[in-house]
Image (cartoon, rainbow, N blue to C red; front, side, top):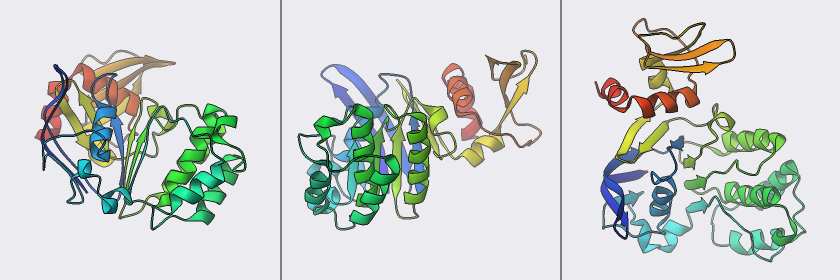
Length: 275
């Protein structure tokens, strides 16, 4: 679905990516993780064709995103973190813009609005930030595009809405779609995103499925710091330890612990998954 090969990108004299290479496949919901400033939003904008890079460095289904061709735009949707709706009635917004998406499903849109408890007869400007977020999420999922890019989609959502969001996402994913979610709220999406992509200032650290992560690493609760562990994180009742899974034990992957362990032990994690 997405091929990025030796991507270099800078804002003025500030480099963001220096030789980033990665592939994202259809049929997946990718979690894009990284500290502030490593380029997560920039990468989403490059995939969406909002930022220009050299030709053939980034391709989506064989297309060059920055060309912004109609057959690319009609099969891609991008939700920015700071989405602010126009001074337009939500239902009218969906009706007008839905015409640009061949697979747009109006019934699905209305169903999602209802489940999110958003009044589609109101203007975006009359809704709270969280309500606006739920309205655009409903429309994005209803376009049924092959590529869906989301920047911090759970920000502004209350707890019931986050639950509904996870449900809607799991129902919308299919073998032909590729969904990329950039987030700091890993606990909100822990049972949804897979594979996991972790970036740092030097580029890609990790791009692996939850299954392979659980094969290589063991996550467990310990009453004390484990000296041989890759990472120990204090928690109620002791420590969450991330260890190499020598014994091939089964454990539930903690995305928060994985992220922190990866940042503190980049070379060890990269070597572990490259071997």
